Image (cartoon, rainbow, N blue to C red; front, side, top):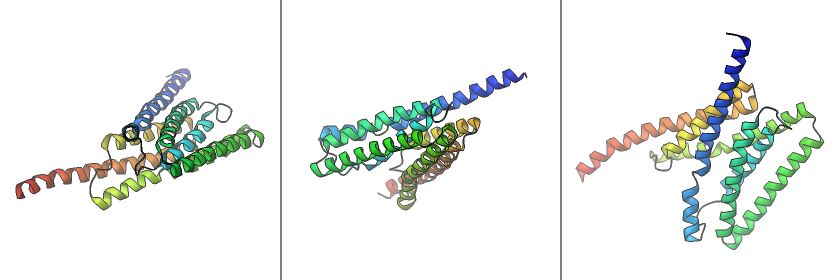
Amino acid sequence: MSEGALFSTYSYCCEAAGVAGNLFAFVLFVSPIPTFRRIIRSKSTEQFSGLPYIYALLNCLICLWYGMPIVSPGRLLIATVNSVGACFQLIYVIIFIISADKEKKLKMLWLLLAVFSVFAIIVFVSIRVFEPPNRQLFVGYLSVFSLISMFASPLFIINLVIRTKSVEYMPFYLSLSTFLMSLSFFVYGMLKQDPFITVPNGIGAILGIIQLVLYFCYSRREVLRRPLLESYA
């Protein structure tokens, strides 16, 4: 096989992995829609927290900036997925603010202002202080830290499943999408030889596998237990 054909195959595989990651990420972005339909119908945020969407917005903005050509040339698919994610998270935050009581509304407004302020500082510092090679390192380390901090949510779900021995709060398709998205971007990062993409998504893929294993273990246990309970009743 010629060198040109090898490069073409490599480029195709790289782009395919990035596009797949974008598609699986979209499933994750739309997953909170039922929650916000409930909030809109009840005109109340009830006991829901807006913090996950604030954190997700900041994470998407940082990763969006990392994927921009001025920071990391050739990482446009990282920019596209996180631009879509940032739009979704911003919409969720706005709906939450509109529906929240006065105390929550003020808190969320301040947090939203803080997110945009932090992002503006990151953009300013990365452009004014760092030249292109070091600029990618600076934003890359921030994006890795931000992504790893987001793994607190899967860890919480895994802990909850183990404690309750139930998969009620861990939807299968959400866990599957998380795994497939992380795996796709892990492959994309490997092909791009970019540790700032590979490392966090590798961790995400491992956590996704753990969630799927737990789902099959505990869902099977619930199925086996149910007939016994029904016959006993």
